[in-house]
Image 1 (cartoon, rainbow, N blue to C red):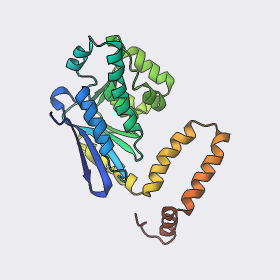
Image 2: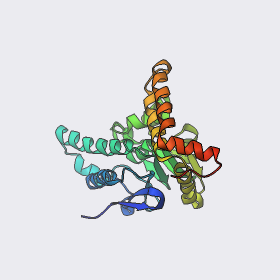
Image 3: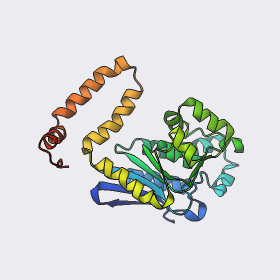
Length: 256
């Protein structure tokens, strides 16, 4: 069994998940989905951030053509089982406690664009491109839709879904699919700057900030008030909150 996904850990608690199937444009098949899901499960829960990246000139071309050919004769039950595996992979990425950073160096199509949408921060090169082309195959971007709609909103998601049109990196940045846009030679440095910013914050505070957005997003302002008051009070009295405040007042770097 070829290893198509690798997990590595580097200094400062940064984990990297690498899709390593460049000969197939890092496209999904059942084995890659299983390996990626397993790699996510092995991420150290104390990691400060996770970088999702891939090898070659394409970030992820979506579903592998040969895999799709094999699915053409699947029954409804087989299709449901296959889709559940894909949905589980995306949900595992979404459920990571720490920030998920996508490093996007080329085309991200279909489920590949879904990987960009599920990331908390996507850093892409000016040569990257994005599309949800499923309707052109007579199918739907169903599994990725919750993450795309959350990130882009219903109007922009609808436009991308029903046309299947490819957008360039500049447009992806304009609509919020990509957070940072850089020249190809600066991609790794730009990802590094994002990671520097993440690790400069308190580990628990950074993860709590990610969780806070999701908690508040689903509530009306009046419903969120009690929650936000509780969250800030709890973290102010925590060891990390106290250390951060003392470090600021003492004009020194915090000890985390």
